[in-house]
Image (spheres, rainbow, N blue to C red):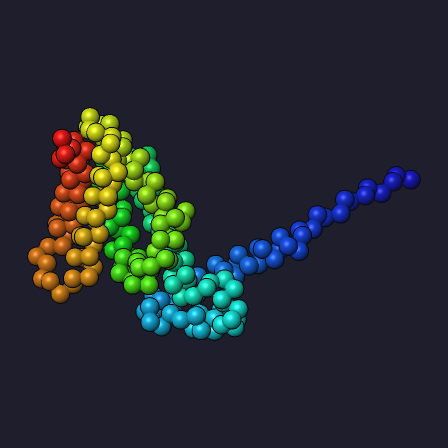
Length: 223
């Protein structure tokens, strides 16, 4: 008689590993619920108590994952920047010259914030996240660094392409960001202004920002 094949026992994940996965999933759920509350009702409605209630846990239990509302808002900010990074990376992937990718990256940035104006307000206009220690923590996060890291190499490639000064790349990167935020603040926040043709203004803004970056790379004002 043939011997029965012995099936090796299934490997069981440790209780600690399972617990870590459960905590990660719950943390993600908390962020999703907080995002929904913020988008639906605004930042004032986003409280630790309201989030805990919708997640189905006690307010004290929520403090295990986030120390306070500001820390929760930073997590939302982090999630937003992850989405932005993905959109910009897709937009410039496989594109032509560095100068073309620069313009595509500007357009992708504008498109993301235009599609999510509430996210723009949270990242750039929320007092809870732009001031104090939580703002400093955000600048050290992986998501924030990813957004920065995708811009600087691209601008360095532009510098090489136009025979510019690589040393100016960090300054050109910051110029690009400041000009993009300035346009977005005008278009998304200053809605009462009677813009003649916002679509044409947007197209001119993209080209003007790109030219400003190239000019910064080509000319050192301190020389």
